[in-house]
Image 1 (cartoon, one colour):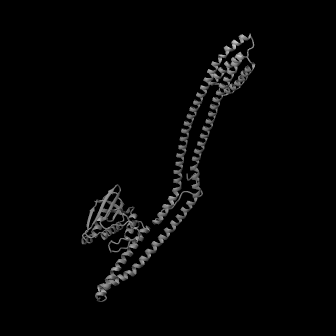
Image 2 (spheres, helix red, strand yellow):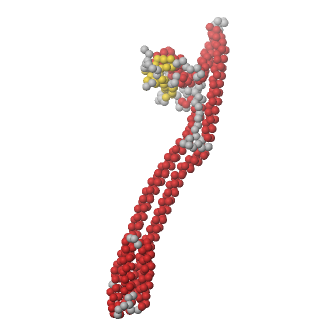
Image 3 (cartoon, helix red, strand yellow):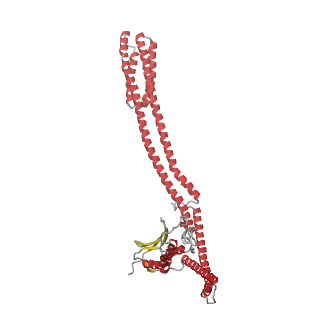
Length: 484
């Protein structure tokens, strides 16, 4: 759809989506109006025809009654005025029958009308006959008047049939209403479903570029300056995507400049710090003369803080080197279980002094990593576990292998990581806000360096939810085999 339709702005995309979604609903409304209008017209025609038929039938019955009364008076009294009334009624009946035959000439009602017309015409002709003597004409007229019974019977049948036809037309109209109702339901349902699909389609089209912008901003916030930013959609949002990509490149340049500057500063700090360290060592060893007890304490503090500062500078250098990623890591096949055993041995004395139990479940596994970097990772994780685990506590190292991935869990029985610290735990120089943790202060770079080193080895480092203590997970790709 993006190739076929590329709106100029986000607003035009919204307006187009609104019009396209509303169009099927307008079609459904128009179809409904058309069907209802047809039903109204059919109902009006049916009602008009039924009412007109019944009204004409009843009018015909009244005319026949009037004609019969005039004919009987003429037969008894012989006055010409009554015969005139018979002829006037006959003419009116002829006009009425002509109207009724125009609209009902081809059905059963038309047949009855023709039968009634033939008998009524014969009766009127007999009444108007002038041949023969008066007595014979009287007798013929009296015999002819008996035909009114047949005419009245036909008139009653005509009225009954008119009522029947009205009921049939009503039933037919009901069937049409039912059929049109079903048709209308299917049409409206189909158009509403089609509108729903259009709504889903345009929601996807509208949300997609917004989501791309949102994810791009999140990646920039997380420090990912390497992934290009591309936003597909309206031209104004594509322009925003281009600006975000320019911002990404600019931030990437500034980030590299910052890393180089920090590396330079850290390197420059090591030279005077080494001189201070050497000087404090000379004083501590008494090579420049004996020291008093207080002077020795000051020299000890100075020497200790020089060690801490050297460690901090080295951590900064390691972190910058990990972030720079300009030199590819020197990868080699390493037995992960042996490496973990070696790291655990480095912390054995500290754990023994504090009566901390170390539980290990290791399996032979070979990984292709930078050995020094990976050793630093697990040394940092185990050092943190020892630092935050109380005396007589427990630390667990668990290895698992699934497919071509090797997973290592490092879990302690300390206070754990509070919820507000979890999102920032891998940020550089972040040390958290927990008050009940160890008084030993670190640089705040250990986990940040560890995450960068693990990513350099195509692995992942995560902080997992845990009911007690901190639980870190390291996942690495397995190598081709296990060394003997």
